[in-house]
Image (cartoon, rainbow, N blue to C red):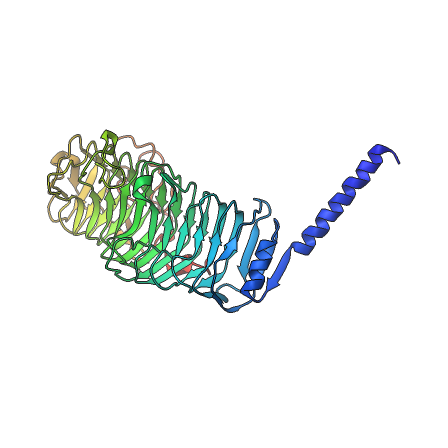
Length: 465
């Protein structure tokens, strides 16, 4: 047989052997944790391991160290969504060089702090799971790069430890996370710090670039501590999230620089607080919060040597524009700091719409280089520190939609009234393009009916699309 023919036949045989192996290993169904662990230990790219519905009590970590591929991930799934419950003292531990792993459809009621994705892993996805763990610790702790956390429910917590905690290795936050369509709800006051619904980074990781995208998540009744969402890393995007009925907690850019925060809805919270440099906060809808947006009064300047892990970094060169403030106790505020704080520097407050509620702006600290322009104010409790040249008083002619969101109506003086050039502001709070002359506030007027942007439980969690 010619050599080329031999190779051709050998290649065909290898291909047939590969397909046969793939076919045999494609799907395994197990009915015990011991069998689950055994199947995981032998898993190959493309395998699906299904745990039959039932309640399983884990007395040891369910270790995942296998490596799938982008085209053929290794999937570990419950028989039906929520049908396989992992109770006991331990959960999944994705570790080593594990990559392209999907963990889907489980209900986790085991001890908190025992479901982890370690540094060194990559492309690990938790999807359509329910976390309702007991005791102290995070429900899910992630340190690996390129993780995807989507369509999960994190619920009913009252102990220290975040519902979802991202860290990394040393001073580097886990990179390129995608956190979307999750439902965080009912985090009771834990009477302690470290009880956030979502923590993205640690103090020492503030200057590391995460490039994370946190979008389309719903946070409800999460009052575990002062912060419902806390950012402690740089270069992340928070967009199109809804935070509602968290009156004791705020969304805090506590550390880090260069974050984009847009298209979010905050209702009945402590508001959004900003520390760090060059953040762009635009197109957010802030209603009936204690403070709509709080610009931080810095305790130190990290660029000048203040400790990144503990300093409240002076906000420098931040832009707060095209937001809608409705019925907040105070719309825009810098709180006092004792002893005297460093305030904020070169902050732009432009083209915001402020309606009802308390004073427009209260600034109790240094604010050099502040720029105010194009804002519209209507029936607030006084302009406060908002300078006369920075706003006009006019009825914006808002109309309430089916979810109670106030939008611009035809003929509003906010339409096409924005001042200045803001090229980075290209969409409104529901993703509609802002082309040409822009409208003041979060909403870009459209004569066509628009679907309400307020997220509901049907839009997120294990059963969502």
